Length: 391
Image 1 (spheres, rainbow, N blue to C red):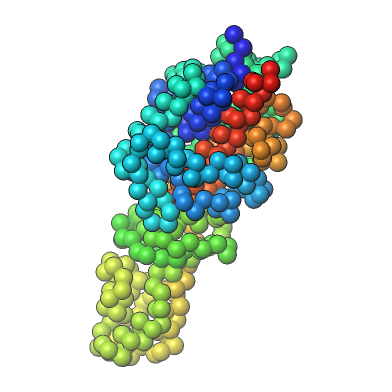
Image 2 (spheres, helix red, strand yellow; image 1 turned 45 degrees about the vertical axis):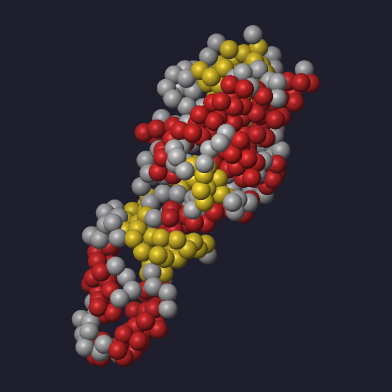
């Protein structure tokens, strides 16, 4: 039997691509080395799966080609996936910044995708090693099976404990498909000894604006025993390059607050003034870092304003990140210049497709990467089904 498509990877992208192709009439085989499908879906959103975002648009994605994602995102939108969620009776709710979550469990999303695959008569085989891939006579030979089309949906190497690997890049290399250097994204930063005072207050979170290289995000920042994390930090990590400093605004209107504190409580120390607006442990750490031991009345206004300026742009020099082990996604990957933005097919290798995290398209934190998985999957699955009908 020759399949219309073999899809490698039973994550979100692979499952939906298989369902889209199968329901449109293609004969599809879905393979994964894992013993369960959708493992990253199951752990996402604290087990409730942040499955998309109402604000999803191409500008929310990083890529060497920032226009590449537009086509797929516009043809299968966040509203299309939400309609699928509702068709399956999955209750959902919206959190901050347009993030959509299941009311119940992420298991509902995996069950929905498996049900969609079943409707398309997709053959799902788990605990299956891919082995060597051969390409001859216009067909792909994988794990003893033959297909006219092959879809790389194996994701990136982020969160290796979930079984993630860089096999997508190995397959791409086999077919001479270029790769944009992969790197951990949406990942915590590590800090050096000079920032020990901040590592000593692990667990403290604060509303913030974080920035790097002209990119800013306004969400919470979290101090950890190794460095910095939290939504704002994870967001800017995708834009960070080794050696770049980052900054955090941890107290808006700091000048006004400190001037008022000096007028109202001149006998107090700086940490007391800071503790009115920041967590006490953070205020204590900042007091230590700034080294101002005088009562506020005896602190020159120029020194106080210098402190205020630092509070609105507290700079850190990360020593690195916590790597793929803690990265929510992988930036970089299969070069979009090698792919059709409409179908996700490799231009130089007819019948070979790449979708989801394996591709050099990386979304913001908050459901965007799942939406890219859904949109790219439908683009590939739809095209494969059209080819099957044409044959």
